[in-house]
Length: 106
Image 1 (tube, rainbow, N blue to C red):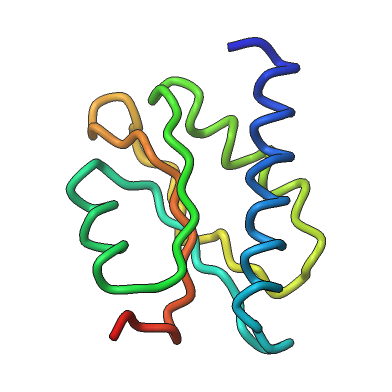
Image 2 (cartoon, rainbow, N blue to C red):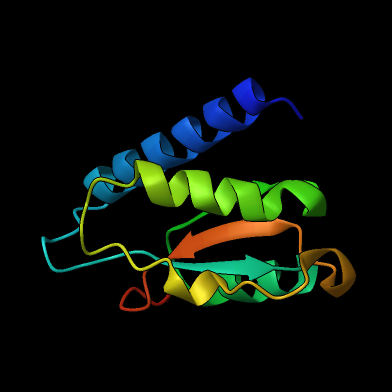
């Protein structure tokens, strides 16, 4: 993936986050939590929380996407610290997924 492609992917992801928060009536104190996830972990998060926003990226580019998204987030209360920095390639992680822990799926 080129630098330009990663920048565009991060920009679109942040746009989707902001748009989804607006569409779902997030209050000023509601924030997104971020997690790096495998297919199975992503499915579990999607069943538990609504809304969720995910981006599938090749494992070798996942850390770069996290850093780009983090740099583009303008809302100071977004929490991306939970994303972690463990060895992405060996762990099978391929998704960056955002969810609001206060919004459980019914």
